Length: 505
Picture 1 (tube, rainbow, N blue to C red):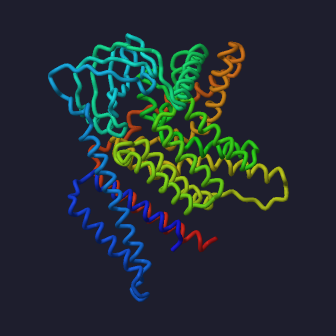
Picture 2: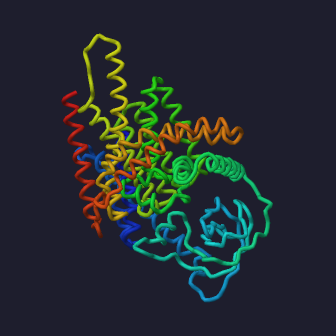
Picture 3: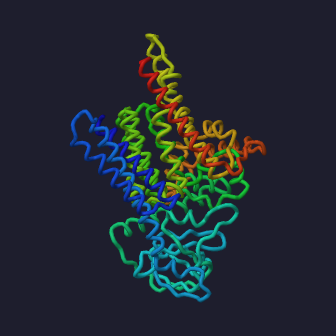
């Protein structure tokens, strides 16, 4: 067994251990039992060869890594229990806390959401406050109000949603006072503040170039800001399976990164040039939207996908994806069950790595013509086909998670995504150029906005056409067992098809 395959099994053991610790309470006596069993198997390595010592040793290490995953999950649960500010939740008395705003304020129509890191603790409180006073990133504030535990409402578990962000307390419309606007920096906070400054300039430039729903859509796709989009348009996008376009979605970033690679190959770039440009665009976009945690995780997954496509090694690439996921989960175990974006980006990457090559082999256009023109035509046709197959491959493994978390499935999502996703990279390119040059020259910004206007009109028209009452199929209270069965069958299908295709090739 190769070293990479052993590492793959060890990583899976860690992930399973984290999953087990978060869904059931595992007594310490069982954890010690797993450790003893693992150590016992490992020591069989020193026994005579007839005991197949290597296989037993690998099983032993899997038990040990499984125990590591359990321990990491339990430590995270203990961190929640020991959070100092959380202990003040749901009391009748008013509390006064001071802290620093550690993320860009989320400005809504009638209020603002602030993430305040409380002084002398690691605790972060999510504050829903009035629009005044105006608060900026790194401002020091005093908040006076009642702390509460996030609740479950309308079937949405807000508490679990915030746990992955390490937020265990919320405060609704307290008295907010800005104590100081003199910011204390480290290298990361300084760079982040500058990025937010650039983002604000881009947002204002877009607002001056685009109006109404067009501007809201451009801001949503380029900056991940869909707050100015009307509820009607959001409903249309949801019905058509396009909601991920205007959010910093794991699925969105993964698909776009792969499409960028295919699109640049279609435009005539060399494969290495396409990889470098895709990397630059991917991480620049992540920086432009302010390095949100969900975006960074998706960008890491997308970067691995780009490398997988460049080197064309399915097995090694999928193992690297699992290794990266394991490192992320060791840092924050709650991503596994509470972060849908992490789940979607992880599964989308695996779907593209395993299913895209299969579709590529089964439906590849070939020609034996000696005509250079025909050869070029078929090459471009294959590049366009790649964009379509990337979209399909990503959705194969993400469908169950979408159904389980959102309770419905868009029946026309594959069609609408095929119609729209190829146009998102040029929209992002011209939208960025329009926003950037629009800061300095209204005329140049207007020139670059013209292609955007055409693409935006097309996207909104597609959403209008496919906005049908029958377009979404409801799945109420889908059992988690069905999700597990789907992935077991998908895994078996991948294994079987790969073996069949190896024999054919």
